[in-house]
Image 1 (cartoon, rainbow, N blue to C red):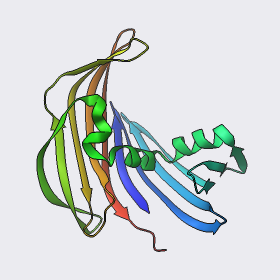
Image 2 (image 1 turned 180 degrees about the horizontal axis):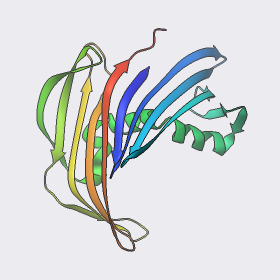
Image 3 (image 1 turned 180 degrees about the vertical axis):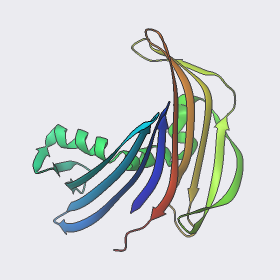
Image 4 (image 1 turned 120 degrees about the horizontal axis):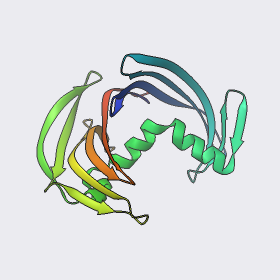
Length: 196
């Protein structure tokens, strides 16, 4: 599967294409090649980067090894590296459940449903928004977060049961120790399944 997406946080925009392909399966362990191509823009400056990663995933979801740039990581380092490098897939896995994935943001309601085109395919999507704003919460460290804007769009391709978070926007203020405003957006631009 390949995802082309744009993530923005405040004034920094990152356009990435992330793909993965299972290249081997043996005794319940899957060897996966991942490629992440990123172009970042921050104000007037920008940078390009490419990552090529191979990791082995056990049938229970544990990352056994992660290899990048000739260095192989195992254990917790491999798990954390996979979480970092496979960001778009982790984000998808987190938010594809729609409103249930965002329980911490209060009750979400369906605003409408429609059909969009994504990567040459029609996708049935549902748009969600909070019942009311702002949403204020305080975590166990005493950091107060005030969400002032939130939208989520989740869809599925015809005949598929897996949902895809196609768009997410969050505007919030973190009060720790001085207020910090954050605007985070994720927009999937295209999806290409990799033939098996």
